[in-house]
Length: 150
Image (cartoon, rainbow, N blue to C red; front, top):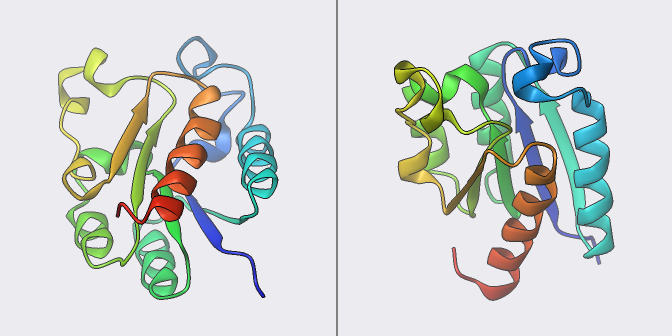
């Protein structure tokens, strides 16, 4: 029997982690975070797929392709968090738990970052925990799938 899959989505500029504003985002790369998330998922009997794109439509397409196939989505939408109603709409018709993820805490940053259009369609949110947030988000996703909460 195939293992359930968690889809980790990474939005614009996250490919620059490790170089981009390390005082905010830390020095770990996106691949460091993905590896930690994959290891945690596999420890718990899940597989992890990862898609990073700087293009909104690619992320929407990945969400559409996840329907009826992927157990949960963990999404760090980057700046798209604050204005991408197309991501909101795609996630709203996804059939599993959605976990919103941020390395920093957007609510403690610039005022324009305080609004999340992802939050209303998310089962849970993890923010401000740096790289540790990736494994926490995976744990929440797995628990939601195993408990049938979402």
